[in-house]
Image (tube, rainbow, N blue to C red; front, side, top):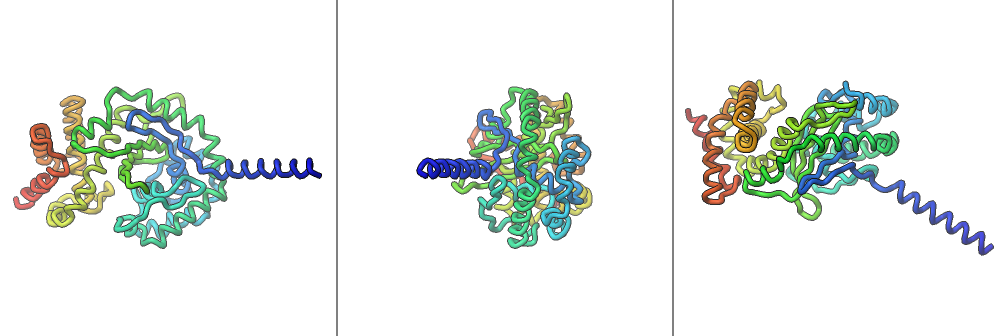
Length: 362
């Protein structure tokens, strides 16, 4: 009896331990290069599965990987997370960066618990409120559990590692983080490139974790393929990393000076239709994009060459960023003052708004 009791106790312990292993949160596939973390994140791949099953238009449906997702998750297309994506969330404008940013507020699956409090955030407005966000979280958690998302994730481990290896192998010696921090004369604590092989566009944002540390994210799609493995070509990585990592330096300042930005809204009228076609439907977003793109032209001039800077400028002008040239000229003043007086981009930012104000007065 004693031996039998001990044996049963051992079996129980083993079962409990196995349950803990199986119940553990799924971890990203990642690499660390200095302050830069490059990863494929389970939350983004779970979101991709939900969006691919829905009618969501801003997702890459044509790649072999996306077809694998559709084949695996097709039986779960009627789940609430899919229905909400097409319904109440779409109606309120919960698109583009909004669902991406919200997923980063959650812990990894299968737990998917809220880690960051959302207050005075555009996510509340764009989702229709806290109740919708919470229901969306619960529905995605349910989707992950019912579809056995973990099995799909585990089946793609080798594939994900190959994506990261090929992306890293194409990187040059340019340090994206240092060049940005040197340019803005400011720092952030954590920089994360999230490679998203099923996404169509890139998204950049910043979050604060429970310890108050800021985390900067650039979610970047794979736009090249070699030996059947999608990866991020260096040219695209430069564009997306500098572009998306610049947003967390720029966007909070538009919030800080919201009244001044709003006072310049007459400038939106000549380009409103063209900006809306590119998903920049609000003037404040348009201001952010102008400034971020102007910074990117200057980074190309400083760290690449004049031809690449001019090519980028022509691209932005062709996409109706008509105020970018005077902003670029003003940024040259910032660079001079930064080097001579050690001022930060945040301190100089009102001068960029003054450029727009002068244009409006004319």
